[in-house]
Image 1: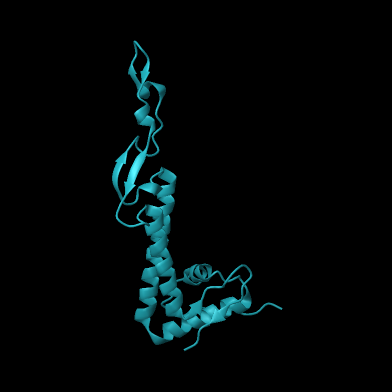
Image 2: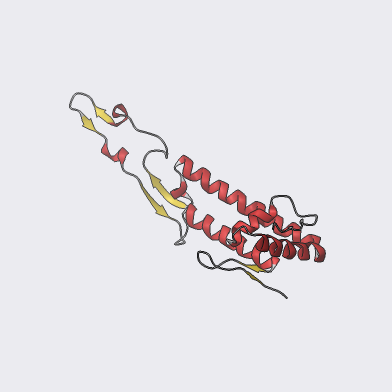
Length: 163
């Protein structure tokens, strides 16, 4: 028998519940969706400003994840916070003619095939580390503000944090 899942109150947007459910790693069940909706509606009843702040965090996290995806696509994911970079431009394929220094003796510019970079001051200063850390921080803030915890482990149950 299908259960009726309540609707989220305004000012929540239509896709917010599913994004938050994904951040919490909750399986799609009627019970989980009902619990999540109830928690979201309590926040909406309590403070419109809190919902707007959570939505700003959602937008930032989604933007950072898209930024990371773009960096992976164009080959610049490892260049986030480099202090020095040498080598061909990311995503550029070098032809044999690009590597030719002198045609009369066929000397090849092998240094063009080498890539090196020095990271910035932090251990997680590549784009992946910086973006991952910020997205994880935002997801934690979102879940905490709503009063829920992420599921632990595969098939883990859900826990609702009540105040």
